[in-house]
Length: 254
Ligand SMILES: Nc1ncnc2c1ncn2[C@@H]1O[C@H](COP(=O)(O)OP(=O)(O)OP(=O)(O)O)[C@@H](O)[C@H]1O
Ligand SMILES: [Mg+2]
Image 1 (cartoon, rainbow, N blue to C red):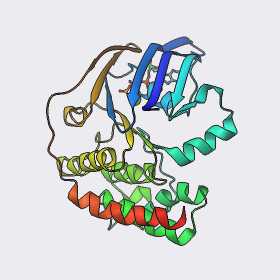
Image 2 (image 1 turned 90 degrees about the vertical axis):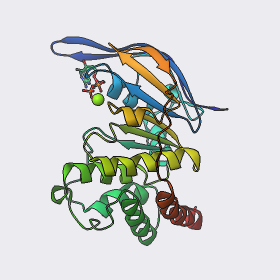
Image 3 (image 1 turned 30 degrees about the vertical axis):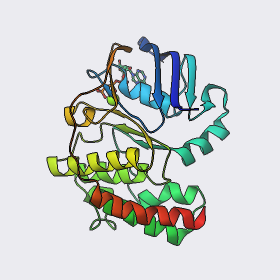
Image 4 (image 1 turned 45 degrees about the horizontal axis):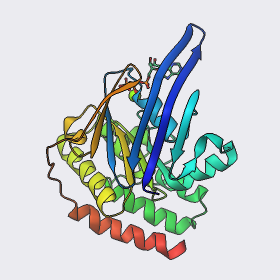
């Protein structure tokens, strides 16, 4: 079972008071485990809609969706919830941090939901924030963070339960070049060392260049899948050191 994601003829139609929006029109793709896949395309082309379906947060109107070996179109909501919590991390385009929780509490939330002991969750949350360069901001509330810092905190939260599948909706849209390099380093480390499958929507050519495959999406259809040729140099050493501590925590309670 080498495919992380299999989509077959997926359609999504949103019903709105103004009429129907056919957001996805027959998407079929296969993404192997530990691969990095990037979705590129203009605003409104269906990238977020597709990520929502791959993340199992939303269901297709028709078509088949298989994620990490599960036919998720046939799972009920309760089983899906657990599946998502333990196996899938999602960076939302709008971050969705909880405003009345500090940065580390936001990151710890999915761990506590998964039953991790509170003290371990606190330590792991702080390590994840250090990983994204927010080691000094762990006790700040979202409103005390810049947009780019909120984005990185939301990436740390997406990694909370060490997901097998990481979904990133525009992971570098709000960060400067240095922090984009940090995020690229994390993506590379996760894919190469931890065998995490990564699917991301991006407008950033440097992010897309890291992918094994770049899918171009337009009007809800994939109009091309190419393997980028450019090798992006990123520093994974710093990230690796922190991630080794994180995996020690994971193996201490699982
Ligand atoms: N919940 C919804 N209800 C109705 N229409 C929606 C909904 N979500 C998205 N759409 C519509 O579906 C289409 C695809 O939207 P989507 O958010 O997937 O685009 P996108 O490629 O992520 O764009 P962007 O680059 O701006 O983030 C658009 O026409 C959008 O207006
Ligand atoms: Mg979007």
